[in-house]
Image (spheres, rainbow, N blue to C red):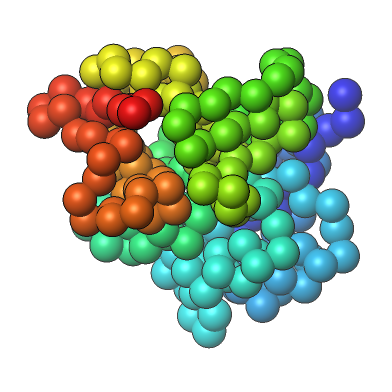
Length: 230
């Protein structure tokens, strides 16, 4: 397997070097950028497997960088946030970020998130299932990783696709936050219920006729979510 190429974007040189050194000694290739414009230039010329970027940067910030990357690619993105930047984190998820790390973070947390995000993206690159999953007007092609709703093809990120398929595989069941996180995000997860709030909201916007009054993706208050197949 080739070494993954990671693009690290942060205006703080010590943090860039910290992330780069710890990834390189663990068999990752790394390129670095100090701002969003540098990041986009590198992204246009290299085959990037993962982007790790700070939200708060001078000039083009991380949110605008995510927006521009998502126009052309579904590459996994991990955002770096400071304590108290809850709104920025939610905005990053809404734009298509896959995960986040709150500064300061340790090597173990960094590596766990990197490996989990890359593992999820590789599930999409290497199909292990075949056929279609049909629930009412929703059809998921498990090999091509596509979903159509009422004969309209959806534009889903890898995480959105995996989440929707997991819910569709368990119709009518109340699935806990922990069960969903560990099955979709990976065994390292379990307490990040804010992930689900954002991702369920994004799926509702794409599959529900009235997202404000969801009939397919119901909330089981205090527990988790239910996919209704009828």
